[in-house]
Length: 299
Length: 228
Image (cartoon, chains in turn yellow, orange):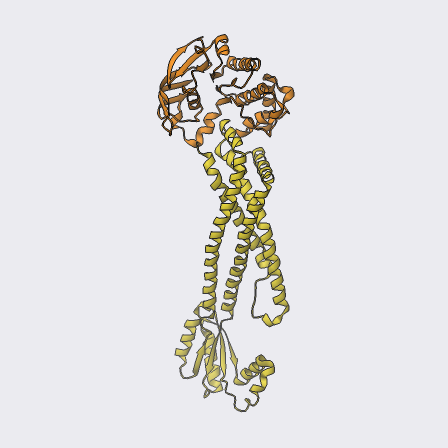
C-alpha cells in the first residue's frame, strides 16, 4: 500500500470516528470494560504463577534425626547427603538452635516455651534444599529409605506448591473463558458501531465499488477505525489496573507483616499488562469491524 | 468490445428482465438503448458493468467472460468502465474536485497525477472554476458534468450511462450530450440508455430497442421510435 493511501485511510477513519462520536464512545466503553476485567485477571495470573515458582524455590526437606544419634553419625550422614547430586545444600540445625528459632518466631508468646530447655522435645534436624524443586518428593523418599536407622521423620511440605500451580492454571483457564466471552460481547458492540458508520457511508462505498476501488481499499478505513477504538478502549483499563497495582504493591511493601506474600514488582508487569491489554483491544476492534463490513462487500 | 450471447436475466423475485439478448458493440461505437419503461434497458446496462450477473448466457467485455470473474476481481474490471447515472451519485460532503479525485484515489493513482488529471477533466467538462463547489451549490447540469468527469477520469474504454439526461432540462441535456460525443470522439465506447426522443432523433447514432427483454430493433442512425 502506498503511503499516501495509508494516510488517506487513516484520515477517513478518524473523521468517521469523530462524526459518530457517541457511538464511538459507546464502543470504546464496551472495550474498556472488557479490557479492565482482562487486565485484572492478567495481574492475578502473573502473580500466582510467580508465587508458585517462588514457593518452589523455598521448598526444602526437613529431616528429623532420631534422638539416639551420635555427633559422628550426624557428620557422616550429612557429608553423604551433601554428595548426592539431587541435593543443593544441607544445613544442620541442632535441637537447641531449633528451640531458639521457635522462640523467635513465637515472639511475645514465647513464655509457653519457657522451661523446655531442660527437656527439649525437638529433634536435631537437617534442612535439605533439593537442586530441582520438582524432585523434592522423590528425594524425600530416597532419604527415608537410605537411612532408616537414623532418620525418624521426613517432612517436605508436600503439595503446597503443587496446589498453587494448579490454582494458577485454573485462573489462566478462567481468564481464557471469561475473556473470550467478554471479547465476543465487545466485538459485537464494535461491529454495531462500525455498522452504523458503514450505513452512513453506504453511498460512498457504492461509489467506490463503481469506480473500481478494491475490497481492501474499502476495508482499510474500517479496519483502522476498529483498531483505534481498541487502543482508545485500552487507555482507561491499563491506567486503572497499573495505578491500582502500584498502590497494592506499595502497601504490601510498607507493611512487613505481609512479607511472606511476595508480589511481582510494578515494573515487572507494567509493560506486559500494557502490551497484552492493548493488543487484545486492537484485535477485538479489528474483529468487530471485519464482522460488520463483510456484508457490504458482497455483490 | 462488448459481446452478449443468448443472455437471460431472471431476478430472484421471478421477474424475467431479459429473454435472450444477442448483440455486439465495437470499440469506439456510440449506442442508444431505447424502449418502454420496464422493457429491460436498465438490466441490459447493469449487466455491462457487472452490477448484475446473467442467469444464462455469456457476456464478454474485451474478451473477458464477465460471469466468470471472481467477486474480488470485479473492481479491476470496473476500472475500465465509467458509469454515469440519472441521479449523478455524487458524494454530498465532497467538492467537485474531491468527487472526481476520489475515483483516482480509489485506484491508488499517484497524488501529483491525480491533481493534474482531475484539473484536466474538470476543464474539459467546463467546471474548472467551480471545482471547489459542493454538489449542493451546483445546478443539476453541473452535477451531471462532474459525474461525467468522474466517469472518464481513469481513461476507461467504456462509458455506460443510465438515463444521464433524465433529470435535466433540454439545454443542460444537450451540454451533456456534446460531452458524451466528445468523449466518444476520443475512442471511448459510449452506451447510453435513454428516454429522450429529441436527442436520439437529432444526434443520430446506433439505436438498440429493447422490448419485453429482447432486442426488437438494431439500426445505425436509427430513430427513437416511441411516442412518450
